[in-house]
Length: 104
Image (cartoon, rainbow, N blue to C red):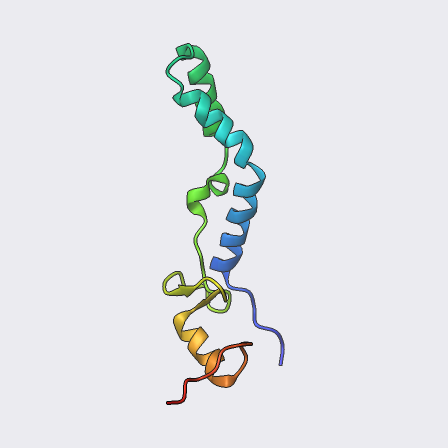
């Protein structure tokens, strides 16, 4: 059986994580300069213009936890990277280490 094709949403999230991580320091510096009221307006304006040149996937707000199996963006178990339904399916099949069905 061939491996499953990666979900587009997951690939987009991975791209956003990489871009946010690579540009974090520079973006924070420009944000600090553009919001600092003690600096002259021309310097603050230039910093804001530099911020506007960054792409969409360099912002940390574009990063969203997604299920690595389905790409679903809700109900994510962050320790496993799975949505609740996929977590349940894998746990019942015994594919998750340390997770067992409870027996009363």
